[in-house]
Length: 235
Image (cartoon, rainbow, N blue to C red; front, side, top):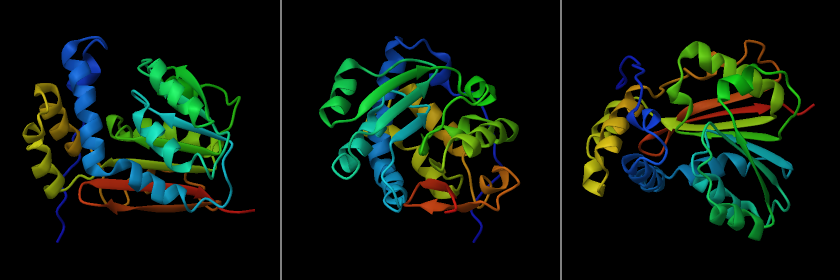
């Protein structure tokens, strides 16, 4: 049974608050708990385990406080030594403690504070083996996503996104985040995130049209998430 509904994109409260606003700081802690409930690290890690070669450099778009990337680093540091991580966000929310955790795992960290669309539209000067995004792509409209994907298609060999799934069960669950202690910002944004999420093959349709060199995979992941994988074909 088709359980989706039309996509609606609205500005989320967290994006409008100053970074040091107590409500924003509390909401970011809420998001850490929501990520754990959704199993975001495991969903992305499952895709990364299929990589044929250990990466040398990874970029995460919309990294927030860096906690998700750190969770992945803890899983892969033994098998993937010496990875250089670029954490891109318009705000620098990565604490020195988090940076120190990466360093203790043998990974190096670079904070790239920039608007992601400006980054995508700028001339390409670097490439990364892997690009990642978690609960981030749904903030953009279709044309903006195409701009991001065009840049990622040039600058990475593998891109994995974990986003809200736009269907009835995640929408119902989003209205219950107050039960885990989420504040008013998170309670409102959780619903908006699902309404702006993805379903079916919507992200695949936005990947650059010349997909002959890419293998695309998209669909539901666990109870509440939608995963998109774009992998450059060997050779």
